[in-house]
Length: 318
Length: 85
Image 1 (cartoon, chains in turn orange, cyan):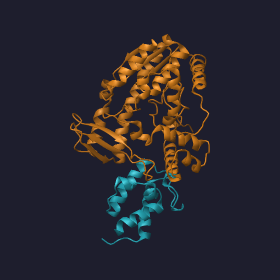
Image 2 (cartoon, one colour):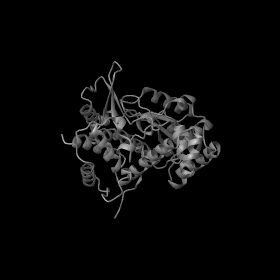
Image 3 (cartoon, chains in turn brown, green):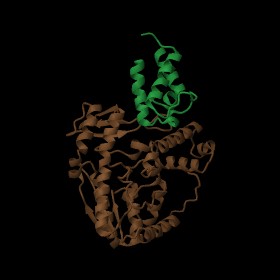
Image 4 (spheres, rainbow over the protein chains, first blue to last red):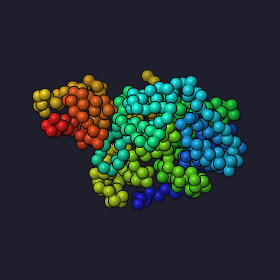
């Protein structure tokens, strides 16, 4: 079920290819682009657009895993880079993160919330309450520790614990940003970002981390629109079918359980209709929901936009 | 423990919010969403911790809803109900 939005992925892909070429060469005056590729749909789509715009010899792919990254990510990213004929390099950022004290401070914070947590053997993830369509639950983070036997221990996190874990985890995105800029500057290339509208508008990015880039070709696109473009421009099916993950915490964490709380098809449909000022009653009937459920989703979107506004601000001056 | 009156509960809650959240205005209508008054998800976690300690109640994750904790009015009703059980 969907609202008829008039989005044309073929036309939009063509427009974006032209935009990437003009922005990189004419506006930024850079000779090519560097992209951090994770094996996910967003970076794969941006990579394909950049190759179409600049040519394979003017695009560099960096894979920047750390010790928590899924091995599948690198395999998919490497395979796509090989097919496109672009140069790809792997830089493991684990030693840098160890130097920053990332894992140590993060694991201490998790252990303070879940004393049973053993970083040597257990995995963990951070989640929000699910089922945004049910009772209108507020966004309170919990840690879920997964023991080797599969047993899960879930505890609510205090603000201090959330801050410690998020600050430590954000070091990963910032280490990646530093590495991308190192590669870009030595070649006089631009860093091409892979953030989409969901991430940007709701604050699901790291300021001066994955948000620290020169250009963002898909920042205005809902995730479902990114999928539509990916299908049109030939992003491999294995990448399109892969559930979007945060690739940040040791345990596999989908973006839905970590942040969005709804499948993208539903979230984007409701959000886009809301932006076009479609009445809640009409949205509800289109998606076979109650009006109250639609209002819950809209309230959650507004909360996230409002509380993450500072992430989107440039440095303030007097 | 003596059960506080609704007015006392409200007084404690409004006092705490005014002290903890610079954008909270104690003269705003009680049904104004706290999200409109500078309370984000971390702030909400602080409110939960405060309520548990101040009123000696246990709040389950499933109870952390917009209806129960999304406004001063919601919190006062929620705490009142919890204390009278």
